[in-house]
Length: 388
Image (cartoon, rainbow, N blue to C red; front, side):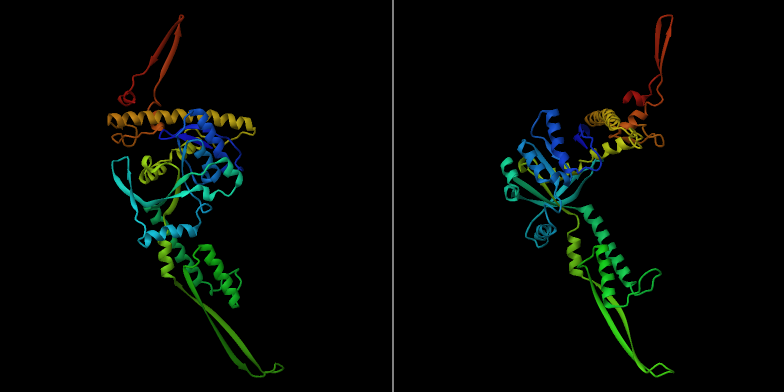
């Protein structure tokens, strides 16, 4: 588990725990380590929904710091989310657009939403937690990401189509599949498909049961009899109103923060959360190139911890190098070119540390000792290396 300093992305605290442990109890010790390291209050902790545990939020608030995290379905149920979103759909709640500035200079609307305030004392059910933490006002940010809404809508429509196709094939004989003879068999098979594709309430199914009888005359020792044959089929239709509501719910999420509005607006909160991706880059750097933690061929726990701590030092160097170069380029309003071998004219204002180090791969330092005299020679630096 990493705690990083934004926007640098430099690890401040590193927790090494077994992979079979729950993440929720790790946040408070990590917060305490960051406080001890930085010796500063008023920090903003940004995390995922696992950081949204009430005890974690209470501890951060009690220490004079701020938090920003999405709430899971445990904190905000689906029914509560529907009520919050339907207020917007029905025109009873205005929203504001969230603008995002990209590194190429473009500014786009990426989301919209609104905020409400709740008193957290209403949600404190644990008496011990009530005694340890005073109540505080929390802002709930109800935000709809436009791109997430598009992705979720496409996925939803795809699930509906696949469910319709699977239901239409129920009556067809399939090798290795049990034949559906009774209405109960059809209903059970339909229910499995509906649950698998998560389209309950979105599809309406009607079953058609047709019974035919025919009289068979006596033949030999077989007596005359009446034979009854039952044929079952189904028809599927989409519940358009339910589908429309489900589509409108796509992309919505509720975030929680105790940061005051006058110093941390809705737009700033959403942008801050979207920019909190450096920790994922840190994990990729640790596991893959350039630090290459995996695959790991170590058996002893102390060796594993030692290796991770050693590589975390290298990670700190990488993040600091990258941030310093990017900061200076931004202040000087310059770009670096020549970092990409296949495209030497390509310029970037945000080079990665890996590309910066790769530019020095061919440098040679010679160290020669002759007659008690030391000679040191460094080959000439290219213009790119000098710029760096």
